[in-house]
Length: 437
Image (cartoon, rainbow, N blue to C red; front, side, top):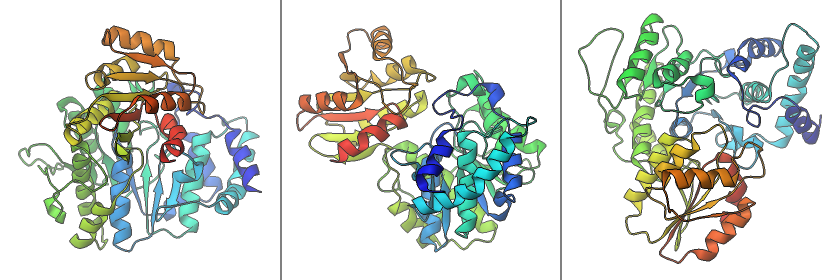
């Protein structure tokens, strides 16, 4: 199988990143059946499984950097990708090569075709095939440990077939509500679905209702839980809460360089607690390696500064909590910015009116557009209507394509302004090469 044949086969399957999944689409039977045909590669890996409404990718990046600094071979599975699909599965931050992808697909494709001929099981989806490819690649590369980011929710996400060393829940917020539920408690229940019996849990969730849900699930599964960023409470097994506003347990007290914002400091605290659990599991993680790893961590398109004069930011905020974090970070990091402009596009399953309400408290002018690499984008006219409702009088312009919106914004800025691209990973992926050039 060639690389082009592998991609054609992969993209020929149902892709819920393009067509939104319904609640009944989220099941694990297909994933388990596919992996059984491949010899259950996930069972041959040491894993950390990470979910959360925001911050799970950044937390994985921090853990990867530290573990690699400590001389482990580290697999990293994340989604979606920015520019190239190979970014989804990396070993020591090197994406899978085209030859490796084709080689793994040669093994996965026959298993998928066999399932497609079985009327008892629906066909594996795009994301399920990607998950299988990731597990298989990490086994072939003999990774010492793999960091697996949940795609959607947790309980019925295709990654939730593994037995991790640690389960991680970064935070809870409103997102994917059509699939996960309309309350934070319902969303927390779906995220808590990654908790396994007697497997340690690290939680950065601070809201009382969601935290209670996660505690209850952990208690039912006898899973010891470490809560970070909340005040300690009276010891009650199996809870082991810690108030850690800096990762003093591993000798780290500052935000990882290259990752701006208080939310990244919170993610670093979660990562530090995970590293403590990995130490308890027998991994050698010196404090010096932790400090160097966090200092070196990079994670593209997360309040990424791609230019100065004007300050130019690439971000992927696509829900209310991430929009709030973006605005807070920009206020803190760039207090003297002049006119603040934003190129914005978002998918139709997001709370885009509420996202715009948050962004409108900071940005002076909106450049609304759509991305070309996914049909789920909200029409620019709908974005304009939403902005007029939540922030009457806020200036905006409409642009048929993302590059046109970018060109219009660039032509309007001065050296003292701030220009940001945000709203979607798909928008960031489309504009990042243009911004870099």
